[in-house]
Every structure is written in C-alpha cells, then in structure tokens.
Image (tube, rainbow, N blue to C red):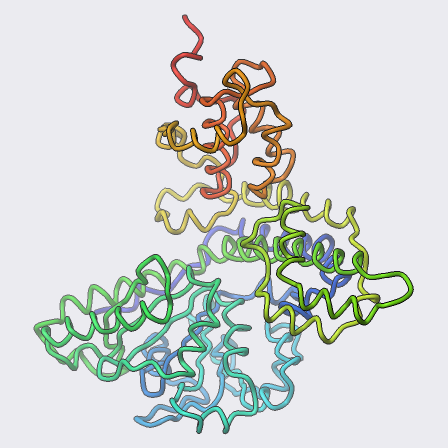
Length: 518
C-alpha cells in the first residue's frame, strides 16, 4: 500500500481569512467576557492566537505497546527525534511531533513559553508535568499540515498513578479540547481497559466526534480470531463510552518497516488502513471549520458561565450572613442551575459538570464575582448569531464533502439547494400532544402562550421572531396545529441541522389547505 499520495493539503487560502476572523472575534468579543467571569478558572485557559491558528492536532492514546509511536513513525516514514519504541512501556512523556527546518527536541518548559507554539496553556500544570513534556521537531511534508501528540502508555493498577507527578486524565482533557482527531489505539492481543484508561476515555466526553478507534497489529491474528477480537472490542467500548452511536473502529497493522503478515486479511486491512489515512488527509481541509465549531462551543459555555456567576453574585446578601448564604448556594447548586436554566432559557446541554463546578466554587468569594453584564452577553449573542455565520459563508461549497464533514459546520448555509425538499415531511401528529398542553382556544394559541416553548429551544430572539413570521402562514397573529408543527420543524432544522432559515417558507412546508389557489 502506497502512502505517497496520502499527504494532506491545507486547501483554499480562504481558510486563512477565516482563521484571522476567528482570532479577532475571540480577542475582541469573547475573551473580555471570559476574563470578567473567570471562565479560565472553571473551564479551560484562554486561547492565544497560536491556539486558534495551530495546525490540526492528532492526539494518540492507548495502553502501553499498542503502537502509538510506531504509528507516527509509519506516517512519517522515518525516525523522529526523541522516538523510543519497545515491547515494554518506553514512552514516558507527552511528545508533540511538529514541523521545523531542523531536527531537535525542545523541553516542555521552553515549548510552553514559545509564542509560535500552541502550548502556552500547559504552564498551568506546573513543572511536574512540563518536565514530562517535549516537542520533537523535524522537516517533513506531513508535519507541514499536521501535528501529532504521542502520549505515555496507560498502565493498570496504582503503580503508574503513584509514579506520576501530574493528573494524567486532566492533561488528556486539555489536549483533547484542542485536538482535531483523537486516536484510541488497541492491540489485537490485549483488549483489557484498565481503570486509568477508563478514566482517560471518560475525560473525552464532549469530544465524541473527534474519536477514532484503531485496532492495531491486526495482521498477527487469523481472520476468525480477528472477528472475535473485533466483537470483544466493541463490547468493551460500549461499556465505557456509553454513546448511542457505534464508534468507528479501523483495523490495521501500522508497522514502520514490515509488510502485512496475514494474506487472508491483507485486502481487508489495506482497505481499512486507507480509510484511516483518508480520514487524516481531510483534517487540514476541515481544520478551519473545526476551529469555528470549537469556538461556537466555547462561546456557548462562556455565555452560560457568565449567567451562573452573575446569578450567584446577585443572590448574595449586601451586609450580613454572607458566608452562610454562600455555603447554602453551593449546597443547593442543582436548584440554582435549574433557576438559571428557566429564567434565562439557556440550553441544559451547555451547563457545566455540576460536581466539578461546585468544587471550583469553594475556592472563591462570591461577593467578588462580577454582576451580569447584559451588554457583554448581547455581544456574545451577536458573535453566535451574526459574526460566526458570516465567517462560515466564506467557505466554498465542497461537492466532495462527506455528510459527516458538512455536519461539522454549525451554521451551514443551505448548501444543498434541495435541502428543504428533503426536510419537508412534517409529522403533524407528533406535535399534537404538545400543542394541546398549551390550551388552544378555538384551535389556536397566542404568541404569549407559545413564547416559553420557543425560548426553551435556546435560539436567539431574532431567530425565533423570524420562525414565528414564517410559520404564521395566514398572518393572523395566532397558530393552529399545522402552523405550530411548522414552527417546531424549523426550530429543529436550525438547532439540530445547523441550517440558515429561508427568507420565505418553502411551498413544500405549507400545508395543502393553506396553499394559495392559482
């Protein structure tokens, strides 16, 4: 199998323009809110320009001797500085393999302060971690497009945990947030998932779309054994990852200098390996979309975070009983989250992990928190609903894009001219029960009755206003069941498919009884 044609291409120069736009938006409109409400202390450090403009990062995770380092060696087709391959645990540090005109190893403490590298945020983990981090640089066509992060092999038992001077899952979570792809490598001869590896996988929650599973060294088992091993791996992953979707598992044997050993499975493994290389090949082309998507997630989290901090500040007494009230708020944090969710109509999925947030709150004096600044929140809404969609519109239509790649676009324009025809079938019956709970009068509900339902969607007010105008087909200021179904249908399209609303309601969405007679 040739790898010569698998080198990825960065793609259209328009991506540079988009990245520059993202840097400017974050610096001027998102970062000020993050700093005001201490977002970095509760979630992740602020982004630098180098974080946003960094080459796509591929993070490799797995237990020892699953072939992580060998996989990088296989792709580069030569050794890289600091490489250490062996049958026992040999990689004892995080190693970022990057492009440079010269081959060298940069110690972690130095790499973390270099402005041209996306690792400034690692400084918060201290020298205990930085002494176990390094950058290996070398000239390589592949590394001009991608950066690889090799990680120490995960072991079972307490021995490995005791020997580490840093929180392994926490470091993995930091890299996962910035990675474009996360490869979980398994050895076909040992599929056990240790306790620490389980905690590492759990730290990847929220990044499921980035995860790819690789069953490595698959040429060393027979076809019948491979079938059993594959089934066992899927069963083990299902217990740990607990996703409704089945994770894609690539089969392969990524030996740096050896041909595939089993003729019976050669064609299968070559096809699977080519699929994985094609997946890697698409990362540079989609990196700007991924950066935009990640910034959307971060902005949504920051918005909810600002409301939480502002709410807690507002609940504090002016003079007496401050300590008691703060402890009460921390204890009753689930209740406070529900209040914030209801009062501000914020999506429940954007709220942080409750227990982790509670532990962080114990370190702060709520009286020193900032009050909710509505102007900042409005600015953030403008970023989400106006600025980022405008950036997204700069992307050219890629007719070769796979559906999974298009779905990464959180503000996709109607790239398929027939989208609304495909999305036109409305099951009116599925909305009838919700419609009835709104207590319609003469078969219709008013805007006042419908407003709370609309606000639960988490969409911006101007977006909901447009949905109302599109759905009120007869323009009587009320909605019957058909119009209510249209409205909910449009909300679902915007929220879950990421499309932009049409300027006029497509004829296919208008109920036959309401269509104008020609």
